[in-house]
Each structure stands twice: as structure tokens, then as C-alpha cells.
Image (cartoon, rainbow, N blue to C red; front, side, top):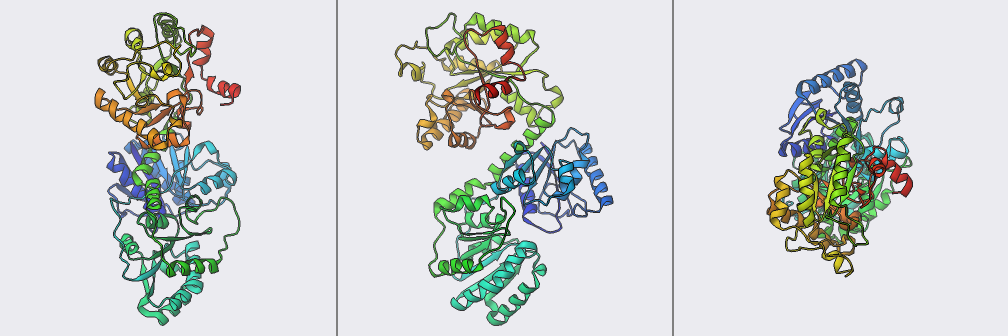
Amino acid sequence: MRILHVLSAEFFAGSVAYAVQLAEAHRAQGHAVWLLSDSDELPTGAIQVKAPIVNRRYGQRLRNARRIRQLVQAEGIDVVHCHSRAASWVAYWALRGLPVPLVSTVHGRQHLHASTSLFDIYGDAVIAICDNLRQHLITEVKMAATKIVAIPNGVDFGEEPLAAENADLRIAFIGRFNGGKGERAAALLQQVFPVLLREFPALRVALIGGELEHLPTAGKTALAQLQAAYGARIEVVGFTTEVAGWLARTSLVVGAGRVAIEALGAARPVLALGEASYAGLVTEANFEAAAASNFGDISAAQGSSEVDFAAVLADARAFLRAPQPVPAALQQRVRARYDLAAVAARVLETYQAARMRRAGIGYIPVLMYHKIPDAPLATKHQIYVTKDNFEKHLAYFRQRGLTPITFVDYLAFARAERPLSAFPARPLILTFDDGYLDNYTNLLPLMQHYGYRGVIYLLGDFDLRHNRWDVDLDPTEPRAEIMDPVQKAAFVAAGWEIGAHTLSHPRLTQLPLPEAAAEIEASKKALEAALHTKIETFAYPFGDFNEPVKAAVRAAGFALGIATDTGGLSIEADRMQVFRVNMFPHESTSSLFKKTSSWYRHYYRWKRGR
């Protein structure tokens, strides 16, 4: 994709670090990236364009909007991603009338302005960096919940964190020294650090971060007094690019947001103190609550942000008396959740979803078939359509002007690999589960006759040659043969999409999660190795899944998780739970009309409640 980031960068705040690291992650994946900001000297290889985004005078705002519009049109930009309210405001007006989607990352609570209610300046999709912020945007800013996704800041943790250097006992405040963070730093300098320095003669206090000149006056006075009393034990570092090195030399970090994430990922203990609240010493027990607030930076609802600094002092004192390392499980949890590559992938999905919504692409009928036998089957499951009836389906699709595509086709449009102008007016996705032998003998020739391609979900265990999951549970069920490797490869040669359906067709929620994850991941690898084709999508056997299973499908590298009769109103509503329509032996012309109509998904949800 061709991505333009727009941001306020008068100083190197966390939002700037986020944008820069995101740009680098996407560049590494082969995307073309531009950054338009107040600075053209940010640490990135992306193309940088300087514009005074932070200047909110209306004349300058209009010039900024004109500059963005010119850049978008000249460079063929696919998506614009903004990282501040000022950036979203100018980009909103710059993109008016253009088919280019606008995505905004919101890094903190938003002030309510008239323009917020009059104009949807945040664009087609909004990324909230934590759960509390998403809740604030829904309940207080009144944004549509469907356009907001919670994706945290991504951090490039590297292969291994720097080894801890515990020669000195050190507590470090890391963060900006202006605004709310500066007020917290001033309170620490007045109420917490003096006591700790007296009680722990070996303790050093480090102050790390930018905008030190904007520390509140009371904080500057307290700092001067501490420097006079303790000399070299007060380390005023200011802004530095060597934060990782300081983390390695620090016993206890006081900070929030990105600082807390980087520290925990480096196995450094954290007192989570942010602009909104104090979350305490981060442990496995309180991690989820701390993460929801971005480690103290963001509250879900407007209220008091007063902090009991006596509690901060007590927690710091208790830790320094009996230091405890960050448990390995907590460190790995943090590194997995905030991993830059995983976050960058989620952000790309958000770009793609915004692109498809901007193009007006909503519900696409996805039909689910299984067996295509010569004659009716004596089965209670009724998951078949005879060869003759299936041909009637195909004739009906042609008569209605429906165009079968695959999920891979859909993703190519979403990823800007194909122009949206070529997207079919009446798309349809035909899917077939399990890989029965009659799919090769009956289905494939019929589809080729009509010039259609579909998606077939195969098992990764090529030694599994019949529907064991049915007949082992119920001997009255007829045995149905599964294709051999050569027959499966014929679908690849015919241009079909191959999807994964686990190794052995278990009910995934009835397995321990590690076993379920292994079934999912191994099926992808086995199919790709045997059939020499990329596997992008996964179908849940029996339509059986839960949130941990969905997370395992995403973690295995699948772009889409395909359900049965549950899911969103469009593919982009939940990529890990795509709704499909069951197809039965006796579909009529009226049922085919209903099941392939644009209103069917709304109707089904209204009727079935799912």
C-alpha cells in the first residue's frame, strides 16, 4: 500500500515514536510510506514532508489541507493515517471528495469541540490505543462503536532485552516533563523522592525525558533542592535515544504508556503512574487493568485524576526493600501483546477495512457447501447438494449476474493490489468444506464449465481419507471419501483458493488451547508445503470456536477466520468471524434469491438473533 502519516511533531512524544515505528514496520514489509509533520528530521527512512501541522490558525490549516491533498493525488496514496486531532482536522478537509480513506489513531482523551459533533473529522476508522480510550470515545465522544478498534502501541523489543545492570540501586521517572506528566514528576520530586533518598543511602534518582524546561515551577524548586542535598545521586538525563540502556541500569521505573510497555518488555519492574491514575506496581494479577488504562494514562470516564502519593511512596519503599524481578510469564505476555510486527499487521487490517468501507463494499454473500454427490444421501446432517441441483445453483447465479470471487481476490482489493474500480458489482463467494472426493468428480468440472472459482477448505492431514469425525461418532452416517493429494492439487491448478480446516477436524473449543493452536498452525504449514500455495484463510470445523480460538487463528498468520452462521454484517466487521450461509439439499429459486441478496445478513440477524 501507499501510506501517508500526518502528525504533529513539535517534540518527540509517544505518538511520534508510534508513527515512526509503524512507518518503519510497514516499510520493512514493502509498503511505500510518507510522513508529513512539523519536522523532516524524524528517525525514519520514509519520505518526509515538512508542514506546520501544530499551527492551528485557520489560514495555515487550509494551506496544510491543500498540501495533503496535493500529495495524495500526486503520489497515488491509498490511505491517510493521522496521529493527532490537528492532523485529523486538516486531513478530513484535504480528502473531501476523494476516494481515499482516513484513519486516525487517538492517543489520549479528547476534548469535546463543536467540530467533533458537526464533522466526523476522525475519518473512516479510529484506532484507540487502549480499552479505556475506546470506551471514552464511544460513551463520551459519541463515536460509532463499529468504527473503533483497540490496537495498542507497537514496540520493537528486539530479539533479547539488554541484560540488567544492577550495580546501582536506581529509580527512574521516564516521560515528558510538560503537561500532566510534568505535574506527576513535580509531585514525585516533592513528596516521594526526598523520602526515598533519605531512607536508601545507595539510591540514585534518574529523570529521563524531553521538555524538562517545562517542568512546573514547584518541581524545578524541588529538583534544585535535591541536587543541592544529594549531588550526583540525582541524574538529570533529559531527552535521550538510549532509553534501553537506562532501563538496563534501573531497578524500578516510574512511568506510563509506552514507557511502561518498554520497561516491562525489558523485564524492568514498573510503578504505573500516568496522567489519569496510579495503577501501582504492575504484576500478573493487575496487568489487564493496568493495560486498559495504558498504565495510568487514560481513564474511561471523566473524573478526578488525583493520585495518593503516599501510596506511591509506600509501594516504592516496599519494592526497594525487597526487589522482585518481573516474572518471565509477564514479560512474555507484554512482548506478545505489544509486538510491533503484530501491531503493524492489525493496523494494516484497519487500513484495508477503511478502504473497503469507503468504497461502499459491505455484505458479500458467502455460501457454504460440503458434499456434491450424484444422488441424495441418507444422512441426518443434510450437508450436501446433489450434482444436478448444484448445477441449477450455478445457472441461477449466472442468470442473476452474480460474480463468484475468492477471499484471496477480496484481500487483493482490500490491500490495494487490485484497483477498486475492478471490484465486481455483485460479488459472491462459494466455499466448500472438507475436500470430499465428489468435489473432484462433480464440483470441479461444473465450476470450470461455468468459468467459476471457489474456496475449498482442506484438512492438513493427507492420510485422513474419509469423514472419520462423522462415522466414528455415529455409525449410521454414510462414509464419504476424501480426495487424495493429486486430486487436491487439481483445485490449485484450476485457480481455486485453498483454505485450512485444521489437521483432523476436531471441535477446537473441546481441546486444550495449545492443542487447538497446534491443529490450526500445523494445518496451514502442511497445506502450503504439500500444495505449494499460500494459505490465507481458515474455516472452523463444525463452526465451533471461541475468542481464544479466534486469537489462535490470527496468531497463526491467517487473514480471515471463516465461521458458519455467526459473524458480522460484513467481512470487515470481524475478520476472524466471517458469516457464511448454510446450503441444503432442497434449495429453491426463492431461497437462492434470499440467500444471495444484500439484505439477507440483516434479515438473518433479525430472525435468529446472531
